[in-house]
Length: 234
Ligand code: AMP
Image (tube, rainbow, N blue to C red):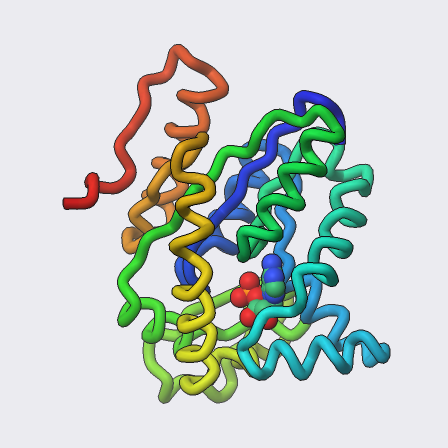
């Protein structure tokens, strides 16, 4: 990663739309999007010894160890496509991971990250995740409007089958949310006094994307005026 690279961290519960916005920001800003969940799912599918261990953790809704994910991310950030920066979706998830990332960026003289915290009510997350389906081929994510249409849904992009992620079943969703809540407070406190922005994640994806672009534009192109993305907490 070059000194001067831009790093954007997307915080927020599973199902808050981080993946969708990471893809949009990636195309708009020309920096790569990295989903640690997606990297781990790929490892799990590979059938390697590590993949089998990872699969057990994924299907339980728990987190893989800080040590493992830190090593995976440190390796990923040294790939050529991260030279000008990256959007991190799903990392860091603990304060130990945030501290590890800060140390890495400091070592590489990369400026401190911009942190976007996606806020969404818990009931909305459960509803979204139980309706979420993913293409088995390209990984594109969809939300089905009614579960009765589940059979026969195919990907718009490549016609492959859409399936429900093993960890999007109700009992695992609740466990993932519990783990998220357990770590979120400390992680937000860690970043709150820095380049940290709250994002109201309940709107339409295109509206959220416009808001994010306006915010990032106002940071990186100071002539644009900033926008308020979420009401201040009472
Ligand atoms: P996601 O696709 O971001 O919801 O992640 C799916 C699963 O991957 C999580 O429930 C965790 O088991 C694992 N995972 C992803 N990112 C991390 C991380 N930064 N630290 C630990 N586990 C992770």
